[in-house]
Image: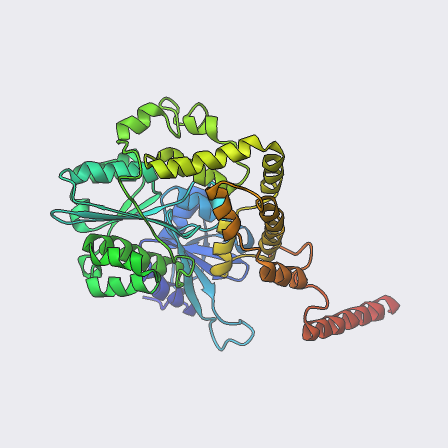
Length: 460
């Protein structure tokens, strides 16, 4: 049997660790796929299937996509339930000795997407983690694109019904289960047939209580929150495994996850799946679309964050009296002061999705255009805070106190990034003139030699 080429040997070494994913293998300006991955991708993405010499008698089936437009192709694959492993060149080809080193820098799955162009801005994109034992269950719903975490646990007699109702409330796009949970037929059937998503069974060896407790403590610092984990191992197993899974696919430390929200059954109206469907809270029964639902009637929000928040409020109606009064007083004050309301709405209309942009900043995947977008959003905060300076209601006053104007972030972006930056780093020209003396010197030299070469060519 003929020996594989060095590049193809490298491909197989990496691919064997990601057998259940489609491997996007970076070669120059393209992500290439080979063999069975290429056959799947060519069919799903309607790409031409070609071949490449691989050192053997038969050419390797191959297809590829340009790296600068890969997001749309990845989004299509992920929406159809595939996992995509992104394999990049991790050293400079100009200084590499032999074949350029490559490694997987991230795995994109339905529940771990952070790119705005792959997500519905009006919905959270949850990864659900479910752990079930004989007498209790723990549930974790994590939106890595915003850093939101919602935790729940129960010792309800009918665990399966409780799990189904909670999954129906959050509608996760990806689910991970322990073996016991996966054996509950009604739960697994609901995930596949009603949520229309796949689930993954986590190995029992990954449910190590001490290790998962340590993982949780590396993210959560509030002693009050940590004490709740001490009281319930099912919560530790559900949330801890979710964190490990996310770290494994994101290849980073999940720095945007630092706070958790514990579900309190006494604060919210309990609605089973049938009630949600019949009430048409967020979608109609017949066509399963937003138009015609309660959310469609109520949602006049101006920002992506507001759209997600009001959806959350509609899906989990309050029954706690003091919480209801807080909201009502805030709404009453805004309704009575139309000047304040119009001013706030005007500011909101110019705000972008700061939650998801900040996540990409934390993960190092934000581009310069998104940084300028962040700057324009931060610019609205001072006006919003000024408008709220004389409010009376407790909820609005709390919002006023919590607003950080982020002046240091705003100044850094405006001083360093040009007004109309390119989309990618390789296009150059994103750093503003005068920000870095060394960069300015290099630019002057480049421009001088470019002009000199042009003049010499023209003279000839």
